[in-house]
Amino acid sequence: QVRLVESGGGLVPPGGSLNLSCAGSGIIFSYYAMGWYRQGPGKQRELVAVANTGGATNYADSGKGRFTISTDKSKNTIYLHMNSLKPEDTAVYSCNAPAGGTNPGFYWGQGTQVTVSS
Image 1: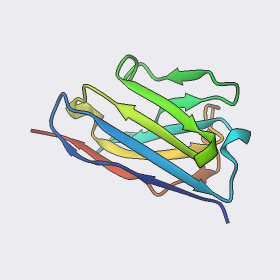
Image 2 (image 1 turned 90 degrees about the vertical axis):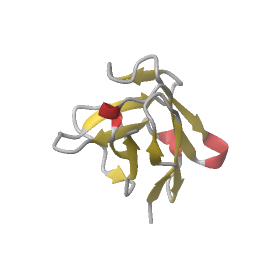
Image 3 (image 1 turned 135 degrees about the vertical axis):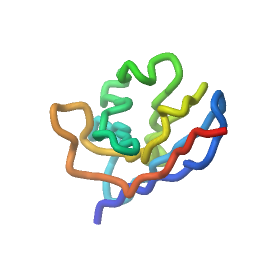
């Protein structure tokens, strides 16, 4: 059974940092473009970042220069490193595969809550 499990969310003040992880089982991450999505209160789900199979990465404008997506293939884990967090970054963050297309891929994690507040 394919499982994606996110962790690392929490409460952080504006300007702070968080490192999110998504560990997979029953799936080989190197076969897929992996991504992070988020959905904030009263907002639609949006793509945050994608790590392609060839190593290239892409970011939504909202996180460019502040967020970094990376993949550890040996651990079957992807990460989202978030710096200079803003209140508008508050959302449930979920990992997804395959990511980056018009529609999200069909493998999802349960999500981890990120709250940016003083």
